[in-house]
Length: 334
Image (tube, rainbow, N blue to C red; front, side):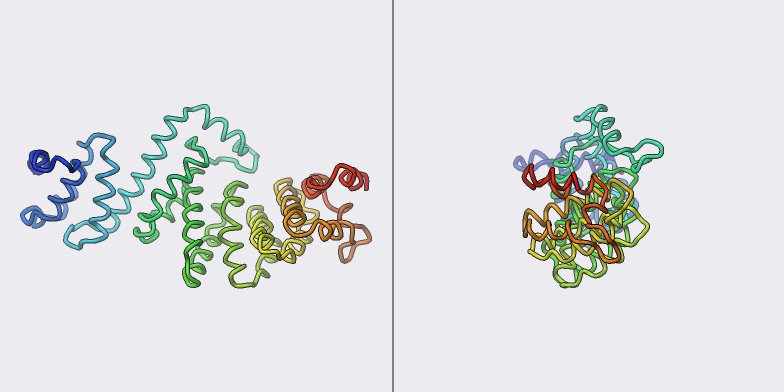
């Protein structure tokens, strides 16, 4: 049965010289009533057989048109889970293809750079070996399909063992937040924080928290929840707290960053020290360096020492990076 249908599709190619094999398949699937009447299971078998028989460079077209068919027609007989499985496999195939182009050395470099060894902060994280621009391109390419899917594939990517899968999911959330209405924005924010356990490396936080958490809270003009995140015992939730203040800094509001920074002022982990110093630096650069200097030189409540003396040297170095050399030296001697 599968051979007969596929051969029939191939034979029609000469009648449609301007259409590729995927488009012919789509037309026949939609228009052939005899084919539409066969059992659902057979339809699935035909599609998968057709996909496997297609040239590799044509499979993306087959999948895209087939997914469109599943979304637009009830007559296809294909269940949503079938469409989701195909979309998930298509994305994974893209990761594998790009990883093969980049080579094994790229994967090794990323695993080392993001500290995936035993006892390190990224222990056990897996990498395909893609660059961030490559993952961004995939997020842009598949955003619409992931939205139409209804969330199953996006959640799967968000919880995936591979770093690039989680990054792709986060970049899609960033894109969605840009055009979301209030209700959609709240849903995106809730989904993000419900999956905070999987946002478990500094790049995942830094490339998404300001645009998702920060943007949502700025829209609501209510950032107090960031104080609760800063008090969390979860390292990455704490980083989400401080990096999310970037959205407020860009809007000219520095109260969130200075408040959250106070809660993390003596944090022992260098990833929080660096992130806090970075946000203090951005507040000084984008809003007021004089205000940043006052923050650093004034005492924190319940302390007899200026903040610049309380904070770890790593945090201080990051915070004063934009100061002139004389001012930097003055702070480092303090």
